[in-house]
Length: 189
Picture 1 (cartoon, one colour):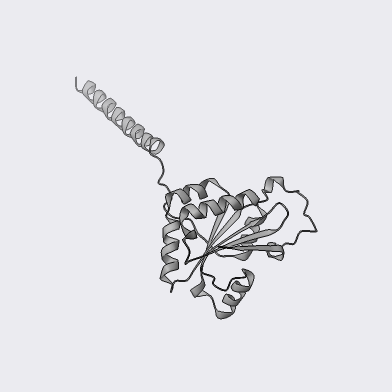
Picture 2: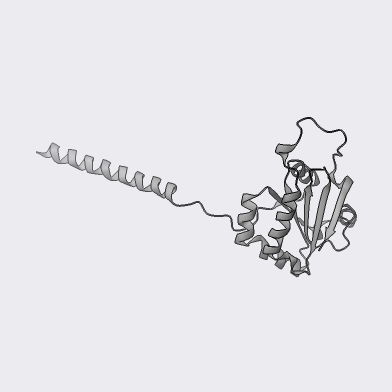
């Protein structure tokens, strides 16, 4: 019966195709997606930083210079640390990066004035508090405070000070400045 063997051939082919599709689907469902291995840096932007602060996020700014090897090494170390990456995935922290070597002299002067920093290489942490003040902490490159575990401690401290968006009034407060730097409290390590 030649027609009967063709039926079993097609049936086996269909079963194999279905098994292959099932195996592929299982791979997508059972194999976890690849984890992020580096901080997803956003390009430095003051309007974006203000927006994120107003949304209740803590801001981490990596200020490095491509000509300065130590700042690049420190940034590489903490931006690839698994514990810091896990912390950033589970907390409202926005990460920005700026290469100060790419700034003009005028822009660099503005940077130093805005962040009240004469040695701008390292990390700047910002948060808007429940009193609508902005708190800033700077960590310079040549300190051990840039170790990932120390950054996590500093971020946790600022997270405890932040003004979560869920606690904010839906109506804008006219007494609050649009620029959080208007009442900036600076702390340095």
